[in-house]
Image (spheres, rainbow, N blue to C red):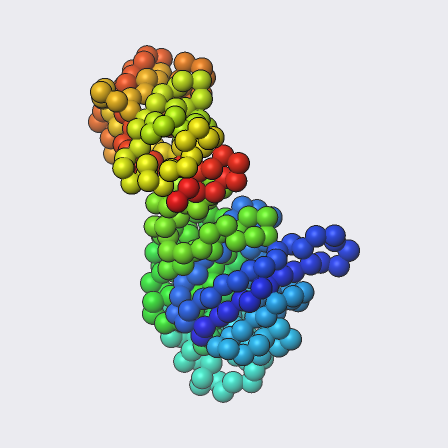
Length: 361
């Protein structure tokens, strides 16, 4: 099912400002769309508007071209998975999964077939007659997913469904959810504040902040071409290193003469007209390379080393105390509290207008 949001806005009664406004979004049939953003940005509000649990103040919500603003949640052809699982503790797994079908007075054979089919796909068949308290958190999450699956909905809505799981189980469930989405062959809209979930699961990401869309597109675009400083800082772990400074002819000079760098010819074209103006240069940790160089060199002191196995993160300081993070292979050796030389990979530079915080294109 195709989902379109046209100039959608939500203003709660008694509040002066809109929680979200001017949201235009096309979610194609069978997309796995992740709505991403920090706490309080409006992402769960937006999901609840799609579900019909929150009213729409302005704009239109369309399912396959049909306006859904006033349609009751039960009639929207959606299934929702909540963060809290929302399972009935006194019911078995089977009865929890079958509940919505029983309420719709489906035939017992249909209910049985759908529940067993979903249980097999989710690998929880052996727990069908257990109570939620008798199974693990990961298994309870599978039950919540199964309860949504049996409805054969056109759109699956998932509100931070993995946030209550431990890191190892969350990693496993990310893979399982992607496989589940492929097997269901339906449209999924998933809300999270976790960029790793978004980058690894989504076919399309919508990044919100303060109720507004900051960027939307395929996952690699967010990492490789952030449209503004908020996106650059939100996407990526560790976060992008940023250095305010100015353009002096064809050279970027970081504040306090920390370093100078000569952008590659393509970036120089984009920076035409910014000579003498304030800009912010960004660079990912893996684009700061080991070793001295004739130009584009930086000299820093390694303050802390975070060893991650095949990779290590070097938390470094410039002479003025400005910090940066550098990613290097785990087998490289660095001494703490000593100076080291690195150089900037000019193929990995990002430039932003300091006043508007927008990417310079």
